[in-house]
Length: 187
Image (cartoon, rainbow, N blue to C red; front, side, top):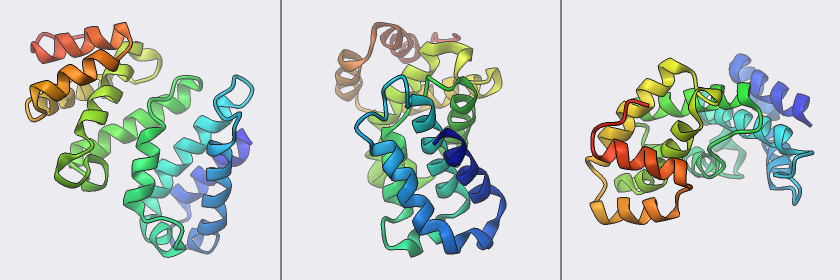
């Protein structure tokens, strides 16, 4: 499963329009891996994270092919992808995916931030969880960019929403959010 998921992501990234004919079947297989009842158990979590990574590559490099499948549009797929973050089990793939998230956020990709920035509260939580894990799941350069993005996003999210997010975060991520909200987060 892990190798297959990784390979589908690599193909989506590398083969351009030549990948389009198999996009629908590949997307279905990835979704089966991610949605399997045991997907987040220790035996399958690395394979699941590779499938999540592949979905991100489908969104970034095969959006037209994804939209043409009739299964889901790229915006819907990106929402699902976002719901699977952060990654932690496969440290290397986590770095790849979190770097990809950073690129989407730097571009202000509407498919990630959502209509009227609806996904920003979820993004705040994800960024806090990623940053709480330190450089085991994010490269130092990307980490610094994510800190800046988090601080910028916190300026646009209403304070009451930030407080709601705070209550739902693990303790380490709460500390990240507190520091970032006060403008004093440097890691």
